[in-house]
Length: 170
Length: 411
Image (tube, rainbow over the protein chains, first blue to last red):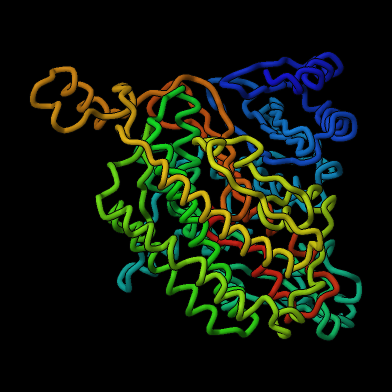
């Protein structure tokens, strides 16, 4: 582990009973979803992690429960540190508190996670789909969402294909 | 009351993003894009306007969503590399680099020094070519048409170099896990030296058209001012962050691919406005030239692919004499290689900012999850912040100054 990362990681691990894991030079803290907001606040205010670099998720269906892990990458520009946080989320009605209040740029990342994984972020100011069409059904990056295939529309089959679209059922 | 019109129903979802005055009709809602020449792709902006002043700006993205992250999960690591070019189509080589570095980090795979140097060299040339497209289109948006033509003239030289090394002008997929596709041809050095010789003058030429141009300055000075703290809060990286006075460059902060060997500066500016971002990017082109010059002068000889046969196929010549080589060749081109179980995050400095690849492997030959933290996606999020209170005409300058590539935003 990088020397400067040690105090922050150790302190957080103790305060939020998080597990510390190191792999290929990356340090990851796994913590409960209830403590993510407090952990981010502590990282920003006490340890100088001034930027949220990335927020994403992984789906472990069907082999693991909790099904999702939300993965945060927080960065300290002044101390040149990068720390990754992981929050396991159950597949039943998945939801995590938003960290938008601490890092405003989490807004779009969390919208993307809602769109792609169906993970809701409590307290989020704008929980709409971001990449998929607003009437899309399902969450594409889930492992139980098929990769799919869409037939190419020509004049002779365009109407037929149109019938299979979600809007045709209305 | 009459029945709600279709428009009003669609607005219900956006009520919390627009002001009360839009409901009463005091301000006007206007759609900009997705087919609009100055949105640099298919970006749609819903604007709330008070006369000509932007009150609210709501970006709507996803028109270029291609599901690359999902598609990659169904391909082997080597095959998925082809898709990385299609993300940010102005920084194709940089995307290859980020992806290959992530695989190499996860596999703990060595890359020969010659391959590393060529990677740096080409990535820097790509940075210049990306900045040229930015400069040309940005100037075009601000009605300086000739700059656009000059920039694309020089970009063509860089695309020729791409074609020379990889056979492709844009979608090169030249970097492969463990090294390069093949070594550069002999005429490569001359072509790069020729570019190095003429390009500094060409930058001066662009600058003579813009830097002291009163119209350009009028259009960019004090437009979209962003303080350093705000830039950090919104996670901005790359030139927008550096133009706000924060000297953060991943090439310096966390060097990869041997960047620590090269001597270059990280240009910063403290004004944080559109003009400052222009100055920073122009200076970055000079710095990239310095890196290219050093990389070319000190280019080591040797192999360009790792000798680790578990990840990199053997050279063709070995297949006739070695049984192991045949087995490796067969295994790698049918199954692909397995990566150890685990997850890594690999950030690199793209022309637009921090390009991060989150790569997770379950021990098999296909990525379990690939996530692209793309700089355009994060930087675009700050557009409403920049645009508020400016004129619609300035909004065009602001979209240009963030330098978004919609393929990079929507993935």
